[in-house]
Image: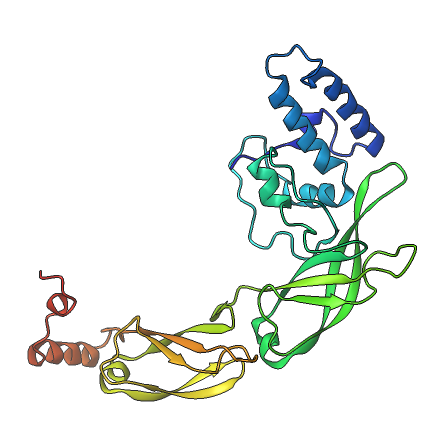
Length: 302
């Protein structure tokens, strides 16, 4: 996917005021509107101009675009980083027009789509451990604001949010009265939960996935191992003859919920290094006394 420079499309500076953006859009619309333009590529250019204006005339989208697009050049290969939009607070927006680019859809296709009326929406990143024990977390949200000239800045507001036990990926936490103020009751703030990447844990739905390193003798002979997980340490039985890559399921030990998820342990058999004379001797003894053909056992037929 190619990066689109919306400022270049409209021919305005990156610090352009809202009036400058409006004037540039109107000028280009008069030039490229298919009903009046004689330019051969008028329809395609008008779509590009409409898309650029949809972003730069919207303080929320413009603030997010400015932060994400720093350092990119037009046409440069572009992939948005995972969870790049976490912490941005957005109000309700309609679905993007079908003729806008994939670049637009990738960045803005879901922003605020779950909020209604005066409600606001933000994606937040939480620690996986919070789902097991619950917590009260201080969450900072970046709120785009436009000054008197329409220049966009980001203000930060901080909220103390109670994270319920059993919260899952994609769940909405509703904070009543924390959305936009209106003529009547203020709207709510909807926080969509996502989990931060973790070195050991991975969540799918309510299931928790963990890689479990085991020694060769533990896999061959069987063992009972203590496994540290967010809900507390567990004793897990490794069956004799377990192979690397085997997945053991411990029911009910995933994210607590009704019903709770499962814990899935992927075994990773790790070999001790043959870096001492004693270790080499043990490996040489195994090579002599164990009639074991790894390729045959794996079914390679080699």
